[in-house]
Image (tube, rainbow, N blue to C red; front, side, top):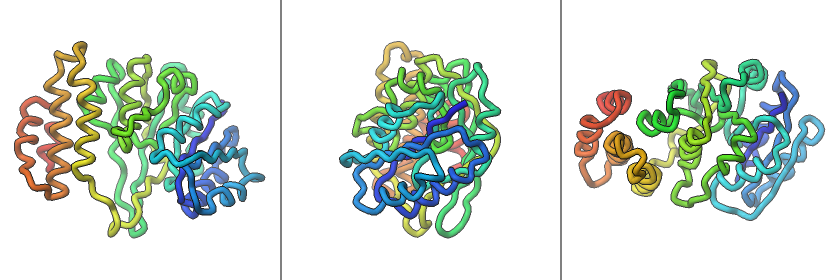
Length: 284
């Protein structure tokens, strides 16, 4: 099995080096690396060149687009592997990541993902709480039960990624384009497989310097969910989808002390949400 590892990056040269080091350390070697640079002005190109003998690496530099979707899609166009794997340039993988992935692949699934450790400059912060997507109807499950799939863990059949059109280039979805793609993959018959091992590290920077979500993020969630709330074929679960939006709205308001109460959003989520959404609200 051959993998194409797609790394979008923008002005992250030191972190890109750490990311690429983790690929040199992979015990499974049948893969290519495609670094898709979104207009960096630092020495990212030189960092990528350092790995020209230790990795099968392609460096693609384009004008700045302003987000990871277009660079990832470019990587998908260039990919020659059977599967595309996504890795953000500030994240990195454990040495056995691709080996475990290769042994996990079967014809029954087209999308694979795994648990990741959350890390900052200061400390480790536990694991991302991934769950197995319900393959009875992945699209509905992801809409009603929220996204717990970290992009830097995801591996998708290359032909499926292309058939789905890759990541959305809607500027309204920057930051949520991954969640949007997972939902849309359900329309293409994708089946998801959770690998229950921690095979990577998700980096959040300094805990003193984490950018909080704000009303812009609320608008992005609204844009994403409205596509399905207003979809006639999903009318029977309209309120449940709206409850997922209500949870995110209330969460962002609460976490950022925005000047409006979160309780009304939480009450709607408690009334109409899936069991998972209701549990998430109760925990807050």
